[in-house]
Image (cartoon, rainbow, N blue to C red; front, side, top):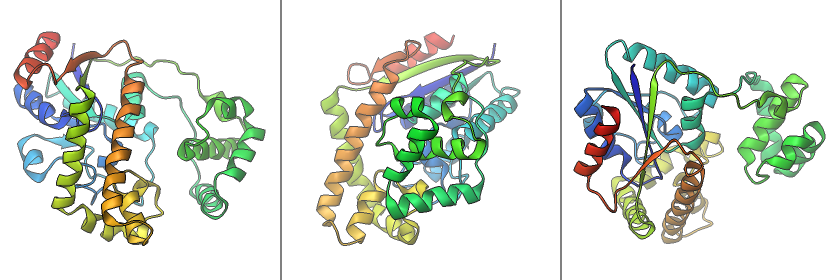
Length: 301
């Protein structure tokens, strides 16, 4: 049976380097499962593959969207499965690599069919959010879908807004679309989780942020500053530098906040991934890349 290696783990753990080695070993392409890398122009802040790395190994779903584009997990599922189907005609093994929890879960297990949201409705809801904050949106969601309201992280504005959009679009509770039925995949999935001891991971994260600043992350943020309200730009690295550009924070403080936010995000990633009993974990603080490669190849072969 054809195989899909899903290489996952927290940000900064070392997925890119190992994914490139695996792709070269199996002579396979890489599909990005990092939702931030889908957008063009955000290469530094998202640690997207470099031009040299893309030349080295064929990549899919990297820089394929404009920051103004709307892209859902359902659309990702369709795109990724289409690519896998085509590439499995040429390769026995394909690599998917990333740290976006929902997108990886969608790729492996599928996602419930949720109606496409009308752009006018989406604009209305986001206009309300920008003018009055999340409170009026939460109030509507509590009335239209009290079951989901009691379950959702009320501070996760993206999830709250999307749930309300579905309620308003369909006239049905968002929770009625969430069946969580695992979908069949016509290929074998091998999930490899990379981790490091927390102290080492945090050190790598801090160093990576410093390196991003040296590469020109501030200039990248400046280019998108006029579009800073876009959902695609409400992400770690850019939103902190937008605070600096707004004059609210000093640059040094913004950089420290990027590091802090990234460390917090890495903990959230690990909490999510640790729930999945199908993941085979490799601690890169305890084994080197060669040993990690040997373990993965043993699982695949």
